[in-house]
Image (cartoon, rainbow over all chains, first blue to last red; front, side):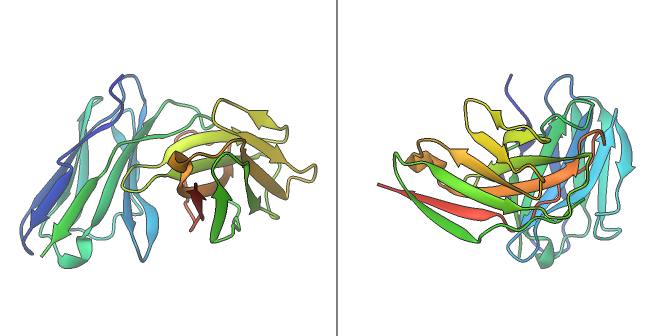
Length: 114
Length: 112
């Protein structure tokens, strides 16, 4: 298995522009998570899906952030408009149903907003 | 989820055992101890988890004290590639799909 795939790996954009991050979870996994990592706040959950349905989006910082999962093999995280404080590494992770099993993380997307 | 406490950093010589401690004094009976690590510029990677018995896999061993208030992750023969931030996480085992709450972790530096 190729693991969790994220694209792009690096994104540099100007303030005010729309940014779309993409994630392909491991085939057969029921859960998909979006995390963000910054030096100040560490790793924090933004939102997660179960069977393509958003379950908890309490970590989404504000309305500028939105996430979708149109099917079991694809999810997007969109920021519109982007701001410099959104600069971070965004990780996608997936897992099978059941709380004991591990989450598999993708390589992350490093976003820089200038 | 219960809070965990880990040392900020540790050093280890290559080939020696690395013992990473974690305190979780408020852990509940149905909460598991998980360990993840994050190598620089990569996503976190699962290492091992346990409830109350000691666990071992190809990567590491997990020793949990009898009162479950602390645990130790053991890398038996550390290599330079084990240099990473190690996170100890406590969460309810049967909460399907719950997020992992990462603290600051322990930065392990393995040197030759």
